[in-house]
Image 1 (cartoon, rainbow, N blue to C red):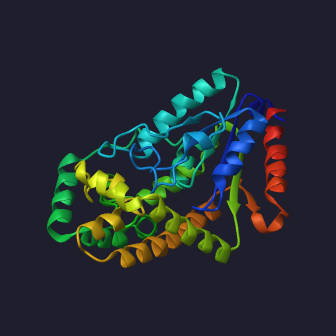
Image 2 (tube, rainbow, N blue to C red):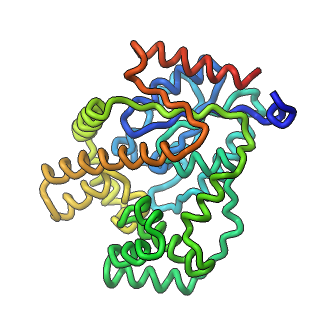
Amino acid sequence: MSVTQSIKRPLVVLTGPTAVGKTKLSIALAKAIGGEILSADSMQVYKHMDIGSAKIRPEEMQGVPHHLIDILEPWEEFNVVVFQKRCLECMEQIYDRGHIPILVGGTGFYIQAVLRGIDFTENEENTEYREKMEQLAKEKGPEVLHDMLRKIDPVSAENIHTNNIKRTIRALEYYELTGEPISAHNEREKERTSPYNFSYFVLTDDRAKLYERIDRRVDQMLKDGLVEEVKGLQQEGCHRGMVSMQGLGYKEILAYLEGEYDLERAVYLIKRDTRHFAKRQLTWFRREKCVTWVDRQDFPDENSILQFLITKAEELKQ
């Protein structure tokens, strides 16, 4: 091990597509290596949004400290810059306690922001341009902005959902300010050397099994009271314009409650869009460097996967 490597602090990342089974493994791994878990999930930060975000319940944590869960109200602003700041603060405290931080979740850009130490401070803002774009979205719909983005930055357009107006505007604004696509900037930032001695695990499975697990999870969410949860949020004043309410499961049920379509259609859309989301997640992770793919099909059981993760993670301590 080089001198540079030896002073780098350990960090474990356990990620993969939605519903692949990261939560249970992460708890067993944390208990085995003296870790604390940081949620790298853009939805689990919100209070009162438990069922649709498949948030871990306190009784499932088995005494393992979890961070960045239930820290914001659904109407509060949350993005990758806020996540990175909060995450790094938590990690410092975890290191002070002599523990290893374990980043767990499926939001690839959030993970990358921490792992590579991406610098967001240099990005200037153009408030006038942003307000103009927000007005355009109100008048003509998010599709107009997304089409504009596709023309100047097809890579970002592929990665940003049409309804994610904030991220679309940010990408357009970046191009307006710098004359280069934000995807080119992000690609450069990806090349940064990580300040951590890390193990980056991507858990995956046979596609048919994963899709079946997604369908079962959605059915369970409905049984657990997803409609009632969204109804409660709606009564609190939450609406589709909020970042939190653009989450999978929330926007579809909200549309159902507003009479846009029936419940059967809403459930179909949640399942279909969650499968598409899982596919996009896997595409993202395939582009990442230095990852260890952990395919469930290559292991006889859950315990074998756990032992593999423990062995690899323990090497970080050496």
